Image (tube, rainbow, N blue to C red; front, top):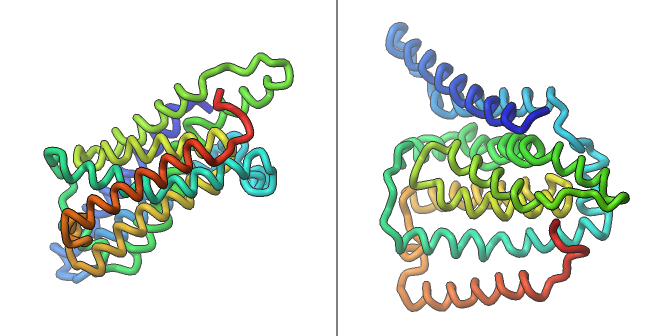
Length: 267
């Protein structure tokens, strides 16, 4: 299956979620019903549909056995472990740098995030189902078939050296389809890490875990501070604390990159 099919699936399912939200809104207006969690139900609809459609296309290499090999096979486990350890400092550094740069427009709006975090369905969708559906589409879907062809040709030493191109393509698409300028830079950097983890491990274990971790942190902070726009600087309390944490994160990330082994160079 061509990679662009999975992008179309994402767009179609997002539109389906929008239609579902519009229908719920009309029901509320015309029938005087108070449908709680209508925004969450709309988002749930789009993500469930995305998962169903993605699985129906059987992305390359997407089986339980193949997925578990991301941990059971030593040459793939090293990528999984390294990616998991790189995730916290990467997420922190990207977000803190984003706070220092001019803030892009927020098309979605923080109000939507706050509404979602006041619903159990919204928390489940944002924190768990959303990451799984997006990894099925943008890693297993966009990258899977090309990586499988590369793997099949490795024994004859004819494997194409296009892994980096696939990772960048997947990350770029992942950022663009969010259609929200304020999310795009973070989504692109996170997408590079997710793509690297998938290309190295050939498994969705690390990408899904990292994506769930990232979204869950955002959800937890929104719930605790009751403010989706809360910044890292506000949470840490002072610039000194922020500076110390940034230094720790940089050294943590550098140690992961230069000290943790990988079984082979990325093609």
